[in-house]
Amino acid sequence: MLGNFSYHNPTKLYFGKDSLSYLKDELKNYGENVLLIYGGGSVKKSGLYDKITAVLKESGKNVAEVSGVMPNPTLEKLYEGINIARENNSEFILAVGGGSVCDYAKAVSVSVHCDDDPWQKYYIRFEEPDCKIVPVGCVLTMAGTGSEMNGGAVITNQETKLKIGHVFGDEVMPKFSILNPEYTMTLPEYQMIAGIYDIMNHICEQYFSGEDDNTSDYISEALMKSLIHSSRIAVENPQDYEARSNIMWTATWALNTLVAMGKSTDWMVHMLGQSVGAYTNATHGMTLSAVSLPYYRFIMPYGLKKFVRFAEEVWNVNPDGKTDEQIAEAGLSAMENWMKEIGLVMKISELGVTEEMIESIADGTFIMDGGYKILNHNEIVQILKESM
Ligand code: NZQ
Ligand code: ZN
Image (tube, rainbow, N blue to C red):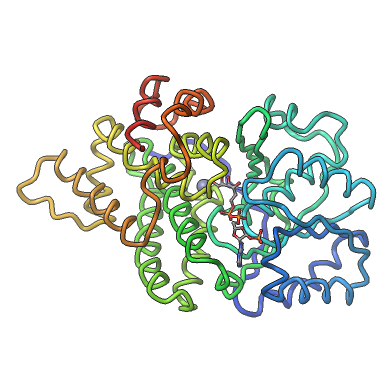
């Protein structure tokens, strides 16, 4: 049964090969001082930077820039962006890049006019912004996080080795996002498949909670099937527009809050992955793939009914002659085979985790209570060890 909820997502999307042509019109809605934010250089290499700056120039904007936003953006980098925004009186932020750039832009947007330290306010005390928020627009170059249509902003504090996400409300979500699947074609294969698994895991985090007959679960199953199908085509031929566009669209719907409606949601794989990321700076999607199977095998008995459904509906496991446990395990094995087939990292040791780091990574793992089993510290250590 669906519980009570309200649903609203304010982000306007422009999707497809012509989507950048809408940027000029969108820019008319915002002030003259624009802060352009991008990553480590892929947008310059691909020529997207030139296209965007040409539109900004035609629109008569004064442009300041923050470049070099790294994957897993750091608190130190956040302070830099806040200062540049303040110095330039930025009235609008245009993020051009992947989830890291979009997340970072949102973190800057809620901090520019805020006197408090953003780490303490948003990432330790989890307060909501009570200051003016600078509006953000995104031009996405990597499919995965869903940051283009949600309020998430994940920041890493390198000093304390904590990687924490704050999910802000409607007013922080991008005002618009431009999604052109062609922009994702220049991604290295490693990033493409990491993004694919990030999408898969976002859906799993929401799907593996509750036992209800919930419309969200049917939507999730369709999204997973589309993703698995398109991922195989994209790995075979990364230039396949149809596959890349399906992956991009699935990423947006996997984490724009729709499939969370009526669900308690889990997010433990992300908590484990984020702590691994804080210690290794590894690629987000790979931190998730490397811990997933040990985690799901551990919680499977507590959510057996759902794992059986997952096996039959998503992986077409034939239940004949099998116990529920065998069906559920066959589903996870099918997922494992697909993960290996597309080339995901399956061990945290391959991401730089050593035995000595495990206790600290477990300490940095936030324990969530929306899934099938609330883990304790020792269970987290056990799952991390099995992920080696
Ligand atoms: O920095 P550049 O040079 O642009 O290179 C990036 C980066 O090295 C490169 N890249 C992106 N688009 C490209 C490209 N290279 C060539 N061609 C392109 N078109 O890819 C690398 C990774 O980019 P990044 O933005 O870090 O990847 P992703 O989109 O996976 O974002 C990861 C961040 O998002 C957070 C993660 O924790 C991580 O910090 N997340 C945000 C969420 C949210 N907002 O809801 C949820 C997610 O679960 C996730 O936690
Ligand atoms: Zn993720």
